[in-house]
Image (cartoon, rainbow, N blue to C red; front, side, top):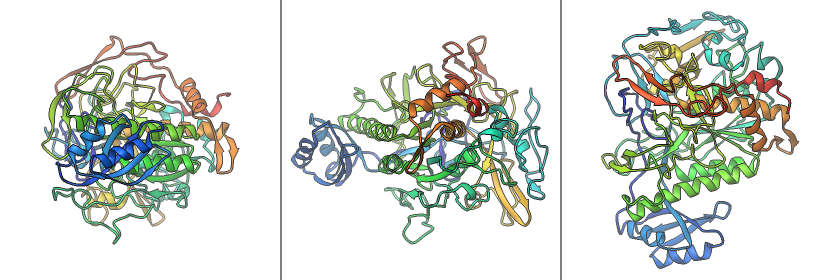
Length: 588
């Protein structure tokens, strides 16, 4: 999911909305030079563990450990020639360096000085604009960004039927999918026994609008902070704790907390409410503080979810260093081909392992403004270390992982008017569902941050990014502070398919709460049944007419996306826009 404006990373970076929308994000380390020893995940063919071990030894490597559940060995070996030697073995299906492979997919809405061409190379991308009005549509902006009042008293207008939360009036997204007091909240707000895993940058388990539903006992952190990358450049920054392994209730980026809040912020008179406000949130942290991901933590999170009764996972991240992972691209070296096969194989095995054990898999489709069914050129890969990108030809055999992995429900993004968001990837084969992810330009040509998705934000992350002042006052229009009874909490508008996916995850949690069978770890429901009901309850949305839809945004060249397929399944909306109210009442 790496094309375009999908990079959630550490420091705020102004991003162009040019027609090509080709900003990259930090990717994975390049294959080690010959002679340099490093660790690799070696995925072996079915029944070929011993053959893979022999190949490792024959090429000068050493087996260090392994995981038979996913069929791989961890091996130490001497760089490029080692990988190329393994790639020639029939026992080996893929080889991936044990390093960071992914980037979360979100855009921060916020006002600074205007749209400026730039490349996203940090951790939380800021989409900036001159105006905070919506131009052709009614503005949704809600100044000021400090909301003061008693718990349960609206700070700003509250739409009829929404939850009795102070910021409910800003949640156009919940109203759109029927997650309101007159909708799903009334009959199916979720059950505590339903366990929702958030594979992301962490969850702020102390946030007032997260804490009541946060399952600390089951939460795990699978990553260790890395202050600098191998070239000495800042990656995660200084460690917050001596071990460099953050507690399970901390999120130094903010992306994971926003996702978790959209899924399950409780109805408690504070801030907002999520799609399924009574389910349990489990932090399965696989992302670095910088918003980047390594392969092993990602597959470890999936296998942990499978082995510990997690019912559904949200995956708002994508795989690096390759925008498109091609098994045998003639323009790539043998080592690069082996690496891409390793990413495809390793993630697919972890996803299969989880799905077979009752985990429903939901992913953001990506923010590259790209038809994933017709990729032709990749100019951003490999994107780590810096300045190693080159132009490579790709085709539809090359996969965007995990969005195009088997068994995964991929979600595109819509704005308040339900048009497909300008940044959202799409594709007839790839889009399964759509959901609110925000579109600051929906309904007009100019920018309105309130057309993004509002959800919880960690105070520490906002402070680190300079988005709130020393006294806690918000410094840009993407941030909202809500105070009641002496306690303040922070929220932030973000846009992206990262924000769309958790709406689908919340609806899945509602269905599991209604139809899941009792199990030793709570409830369980076959992912195939969850998928079927998600699709059948979604609100069908036909392609626009004409099907070639042109996005017109101030300061940006017009761009046209073509929608294919009927209302029942098309490239913009999949089976339709998720519907919490329908999920709360549908008969199995």
